[in-house]
Image: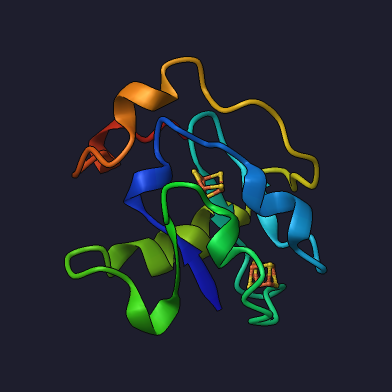
Length: 106
Ligand code: SF4
Ligand code: F3S
């Protein structure tokens, strides 16, 4: 499966959702996750993210291994998103800031 990682938090550009053939993306207040029970590893979403927040589960950045389980967990309660929308208002200020997990809203 593919996994959304830390850099998405507080940016949420949503370019990724439009290409997913199986509607695997789920939306929270300031982050998206991928449902591992739906993802078919097509790879299409990975290059769509303008800030490279999406990785194959076996290749998540060091220190971000917990995002694999976090995606699976949050996908159970968050609604599916299939249409792109504008990123969060101050997304530009948060691009590539490390360690945003404490800012995740559920
Ligand atoms: Fe959807 Fe493909 Fe990305 Fe999996 S890899 S979440 S199936 S676009
Ligand atoms: Fe997040 Fe990138 Fe998608 S910022 S919402 S993973 S396009």
